Image 1: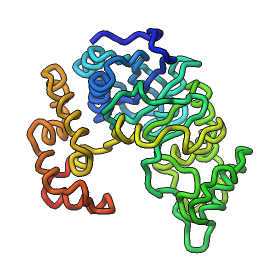
Image 2: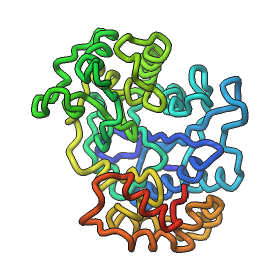
Image 3: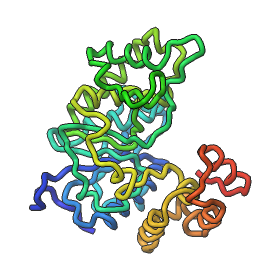
Length: 338
């Protein structure tokens, strides 16, 4: 498929999409993301970038996408490979790729970042993005912080972070949630986020993340920042640009338009039939299949039918409350692949 061009008349301002690929499973997920975008949003009129880190002192081995088959598939699907350099993060914290990749995007052009383990399942151009008011995924659990018995608590930890960067803390609180309950505080999954300029967002994201990592706060003394650093800094960045929880309608991203599946066994266990159908449809064409079958989990779960065995083990209307219980049940049958 030819690359979609920016500037087509569509009644809205085109935006770019970026995912991060690498010389590992992410390159296959990037192909799958691109295929699902073209399948579910065929009239997308922005540019799709697959950013990939380049070899350098922050990596022991070359992390860039090197497979000729993967590169050809991405080109066929209209994706543009976007090289970027790791100056701050790299092998020791690969989650930082989503921060540093932003600085390689076209300056001043609205963008949406997605994790590669996302499927586009509906019309992305129907989403009413307000690129001046950023937000991120609310499909998250209370993973950070983990207050200790003797404190500090959620409030003191988050208040210290906002104070460091001169940000108002009180206006971020959800007063419908009880004090010292994690949902009261602004917290996102970094599976998607957006803004009107990737350079402004990226520079601030990088500044905040480096400060949190390199100049630790006393209130964070007992808190792990690996792998949570990006999700600690992200709410601060979003709030600093006037964003928040409610700048998108519910039920679109992480809903009817996209699915952040994370791992293929979890997708088959808990996602809606439509998500499975999209996955299997975009995997079916031979020119895509010959690339994706090189990734063992996809080969076994999609092409060899193990996904249907996983799906038959669960009632989507009565799933276990905790993800770990889902994982354990799949593992007990020898079907856990990642």
